[in-house]
Structure formats: C-alpha cells, structure tokens
Image (cartoon, rainbow, N blue to C red):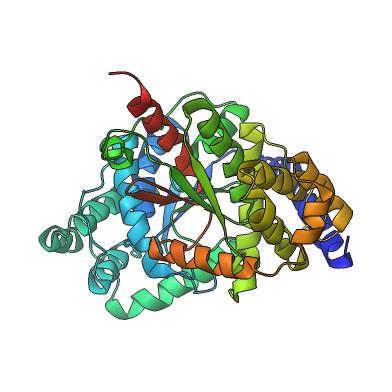
Length: 434
C-alpha cells in the first residue's frame, strides 16, 4: 500500500469514527444554551430540492420543538457543481417524481426559473423576519416560482417586502461562504447539531436523532410509489427492460448501489449491465474537500442503515483504478461476472482497506469474484480499457447526467443510489401478475 493511500485511508477512517463524539459535543452545547433546537436550511429559489425541503421543514417545526432559519445562498462553484445545467434539468425531473411520492407540491412540466425571478425571490427572503414566518413565505415563493406565476411573485414582494436589488448578490455570496465554512457546498441542505441532511431524502435520520434525544412525534415522510414511473420503465411489449448502471470504483455511492442491483437481478430476473467510468479527479475535475468529506460521511450513514460493511478505506486513485478497469473489461464483463467483481473490489476498497494497486490484493478480490490470477495478470497489461471508459463517459453525458451511480431503465434515467428503492417498487409492481 502506498504512503499516500495509507494517509488518505487513515484520515477517512478517523473522520468516519468521529460521529458519536460530534453528537455528544453538540448535545452538550445545546444544553448549555438552554436546550433550544435550531436548524439552518440553505436555500435557493431555483433549486427544486430546496422547495421540497421547505415544505417538509414546515411539517418538522409543527411536530417538534425546532426552529429552522432560511438562509438563501449563491450558486455553488463549478468545482462543487461541475455540470450545473445538467443538475438542474435532472433535479426538476427528479423533484416531480419525489413530490408525487411524498405527497408534496411540485408542478409537472416546470422549467428553470429566470435569473430575475430568482433574484426577486431571494430579495424577499433576505429581509429579516421570524423563522416560522420565513418558512411560510419560502413555501409561497416556491409555489410562485415553480408555477411560473409572475403575478403571484409580485404580490408576495408587495405583501412582505424585500431588500434592495443591489444587496442581493453580495448577501447570497456571503451566505454561501458561510455554508462552505460550515462544511458543505450545495443548497437544499438542512444543518442541525453538526450534521447535514440533504433534501427530503435524509430527513428520516433527523427524526431518528430527535428520538435519541427523547423527543416524541413523527412526520409522514415515508416514500410511496411514484405515479407514472411504471409506464416509463415498462418495455413496449410490457416486459421490464434491462438496467444500465454507470459506476466508479472510487465512488462510495456506487459501492452502495451494487448490493441493491444484485438483489434486483436475483429477485426479479432483471438484466443489469455495468458501465464503469473514471473518477472525476482522473478526468481533470477538482472535488472540494467539503464535498469529499460529506459524501464519505453520508455514505457511511447509508451503509450502516443498509447493513453494508463500510469504513476501512484504501483510496484506489491512480494505478489501482486502472487495474480495476482493465480486469473488469477484459475478464468480468466477458465472463458475466460484472456485478460480482464490482462488489468484491468495492467492498475491498471501502470496507477492508485493500489496495487494488497491489497485485496480491487485486488478485484476492478478483478470485473472490471467480476470476483467476492468470487472467488478472494478463488483463492489467492491456490498456484497451481506456477506450471503453471513454465510451462509457460519453454515453453517460448523452443521458444528460454527469455523476455516478447513474441508472437507465427503459426511457427513464436517474442519478444516485437513493432512487433504486423507488425503481424496485415499480419493478415489483409491473412484474406482478395482473
């Protein structure tokens, strides 16, 4: 194992194990402040997830002794969000399905709000007000913005007032700088007691935390089936099409997706094809430290919930990634062991601290997936995997997506392992006898 891999792995392992101490520290600080619970919701009017989160936040404050402050922020930097147009287009489609699934409001057929409309919305929310009133106004603003209702937005400005137009951009940038200092990089985030909760997908963790703190109550944030999705994923002949999954061996979320994909294959007979791509940093894209740390922390939280081993990490960046790609394309794909190899290798990287740049470790992981040592040694001498990886990256871009894991089934494509349970529910439904 290289010295760099050892240092990176040791740092990540220490960070992942710091959560209990962090909770205790924040609970102690809260008690010193009289037990008051306060959360911050980092918001953008043109971010679909922010609108859904505001609606869920209003349910939270009506259920728990919690105050949530709205903090409008500027757009993330390109380093934090390398494909802003793709993200927004995807987020609009995704938010439409999530709203249907969670019983929230988001108009079908919505488009990206104009810059002027977003600026006016932020000007209203930058005006200081009590937190509960701000939440209500943010919900009203979201309805006006995403319904493309200029008259309704003008009425909100008239009714509640706003800061001057010149104040908006400096205030948003200052708030985004504060978001970065706090340890994050995206809007649509709720921050409570040293922990980040992204959109509505992670609010169940917040409720679990409240229960550990002795609070009673429950907000109905349970995901149900999304209407319309079944017809999207069903083939023309009524069958369930195959799944194409774009993954990266260095992506912890890709690792979490693999056991779920294996279960889909084994339970429903779904044909699954993996398309590995290079990590962002090997494609010349910088990844901010806050982003790296949040992702690995959130992945640990998700892995614990799903019972997936996670936490003893060895960074595969560089030669290790090349070896994994070479063995995948030369051996695993041709032998029908794509999922088995990906699972073995990623488990080695993310939970066993196996160094895939070290041939004995790579051989062990490949043999665990049924690939012989001689095949591994022959594969790593072959550089043709680079063309395969490039083709996969181009196919991912053609889907209008940029990150991994990304999944395509029928005419539906999505990003993130969070959407696999939704897909599974629909696959189960369309696979059941009428």
